[in-house]
Amino acid sequence: MPSDTGQRGQILVLAAAFLLLGTTMLFSLFNLSLTVRDKVRLQMAADMAVLSALNVQANGLNSVAMGNRAILAHDAISAQLNALVSQASFYRKLMDRFRRLVRLIPTFGTILSQVMSVGGKTLERLARGITGYLIPAGQALNSLLIRERGLLLATLPIQSLRAARKAVELSSSGGRIWLPTQASLLRQARSVVRSLLPLKDIEVKRLIRGTVNPRTMRRNWDMRLGKLSLPLRKRGGTTIHPSDFRAHDVLRMKVLRRFRWRWRTVLSAESRASKFGYRSHGRILDMSSEGPPLSLTLVLKSARPEPSGGIPGPLPAITAASSGEIFYHRPGRPEEHPNTLNPFWRTRLIPVSDDPMAMRVLPRPLLKEIRH
Amino acid sequence: MNRPGIKCGGCQAGQGLVEFLVILPVILVLLASVPTLLSLSIRPLWVDELLYARLLTDVESRVFDELSRGHSDSLLPAYFSREDVQVRLSRQRNGAPGFSLHRFHPRVISTIEAEARSEAIVHPGGGKMADLPDLPAFTGKLGLLNLVGFRPAAIRDELRAVTLGGRIPSTLRAQLRMLGLEPVPLNLDVVPEQGG
Image 1 (spheres, each protein chain N blue to C red):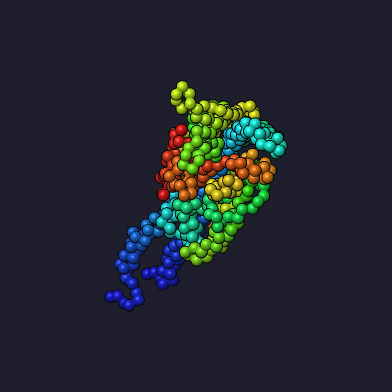
Image 2 (image 1 turned 30 degrees about the vertical axis):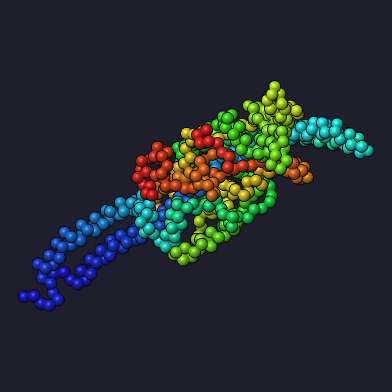
């Protein structure tokens, strides 16, 4: 017959077993919380890396846009200055004609005629001087901008990768960008660069026409006396040639010839920008109609450090994936299509499942893991 | 005859049988499942599931809230509003690290105010963003977040800084303007045709 003392030890075995189980569960819970913390940090690092890489690209596209606008502005300034020369030449010639009439005025006629002559010539010389200095300066700045743009685009893929790595390094999550996604980042950035193609001449002309002031493109006036139209009119404007601007100003008078009223040119002036050192319209880059892949997915992997209070032993690496995209949004004009003439490129994070490239790049277990 | 307090041999045998058939197998199964439970608990897959189900501790749930918001409205505000930025007039390196774009971006947009505002956000669970321990800073560290996107009003100033029109003396600029010439021609509405 067993004694009471012999039965007491039974619970000790059970308690020890449950104590072991409880402790194990407690430690595993602790480990779990550490894993969760690491995972959250790694996810934030992945988000930072994606946005940083895309921000470099968006900044690059915005810089290209600013460069395009600067090149376009220089072309427009050249056209305007060329028109100024034509106008100055026209008014100098007009004053020369009037001088003959002014001379007939007694006493002051000669002096006034001299003033008109000197004034007209000075005006024209000034216009030619300014144009002769500013057009070559604009051309030099254009070539500088184009070279700078070339350098920017050549380094854009590697700068994107550097930015992503820097973001991961700064977030101190201990993660590394998974190599296949580094390669896909370089490919994506390179395709963004390759999608920028020079605009066709006809488009460049349209852009220049829309940028110059209206007076450059059209300088017309008619002589009127009240409601009565006099038979004298001036026509002027600028025509955009493939590598040049031609400005002209013409004064016409209606004359009776062969029993019909016809317009006859009595005064004309012309100027070409190429005579002042203008070589060609600037190369303006725009995104091709196909459009590059503007979304990007990066995967970060982190070999977890051994927790100080947890269960010792090797722990599996944690992984985080993040996707983002570059997009174009002009404030106040959401309907404007993406282009590299306006610097309104921005970045945002998107669900990984929305990035078509992610489906090809990410390993299947990770894809199963991602829930957005 | 059974006396109170004294068990019979048959009852003790039954107790041993119950222990042998029920309790011991349960204990054995539990002990055997410890490594499995342990390996499952530290698997990232579970972490994701828990993150998704929000079965986390208080602080981490707040982090998760911030993170989930981040996916719809970026944690790194790429485009600040006018109220969020200070524009300092100074030449500084911008663009990508190690690559100067100062020609294009002579101005620096500081995000100090935006950071301060972001850190002052009170989370639903209580506490502020600034109070969260050891979180990676998410703005201002890289200098890459600056100048992503322009405000339309600032474009003319930026353009003046990089074009000829901004480099000629102001008196000449004023005289050209008097003659009807725009020294910094800009028309944002002129864009290439789609697919051109």
